[in-house]
Image (cartoon, rainbow, N blue to C red; front, side, top):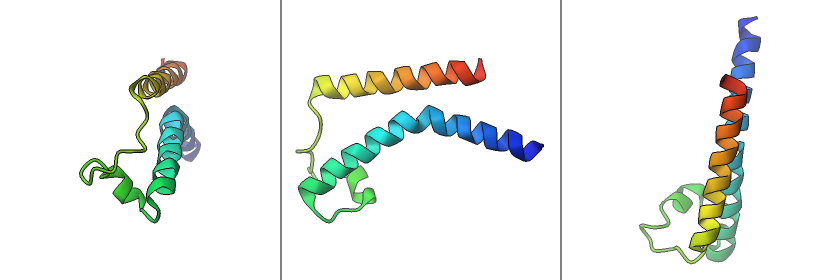
Length: 81
């Protein structure tokens, strides 16, 4: 029975972070299409190499961030409140 509880807990955590995972994956694909053969590790250090041409404009970035926060807040309250 404890295995089921652990699985359910991990599934809830995955659902909470699903919006963030999707946004990171989409942004990485856009980054890779622009710069060619880059790894996920290089994507996270793109600011240090000044490879920021694929970044979203500020209003779109704010909208994506707000959407992620609403998603995470809603499912956190749903699952753990």
